[in-house]
Length: 146
Image (cartoon, rainbow, N blue to C red; front, side):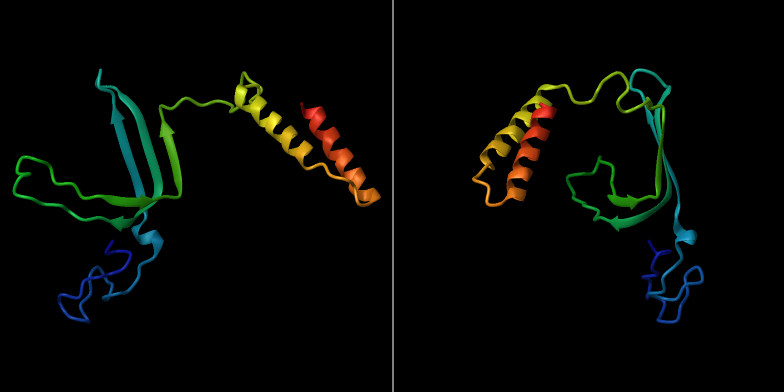
């Protein structure tokens, strides 16, 4: 975070940290990096997934909560990151619609019934020739998709 904006003013207003004056901003090419998160399987020592985030940098650093009761616990620091690109090794890949048409389920059928019902409710006495043509076109389009 200090490479993004140097927030350290403890040594005075003219002190530099890594070549940056207090409240001076850095360039993304200087602080963005690649983060790799490796997820192991519980059943074996083999790697299940590897998440590789390129162009990553922190956007938020949370608070550390400490208490006398939590002596045997690990201290965690929540950090929010953003990134430019995410690659996942070990994930299955393929076409989104491979092996199916993508819309033959119950929800698709209910959605078409709802669209048909809304079109019927929207019918009203035409005020002009163009209004009548629009209504006939809408109903015929809906009936073709049904």
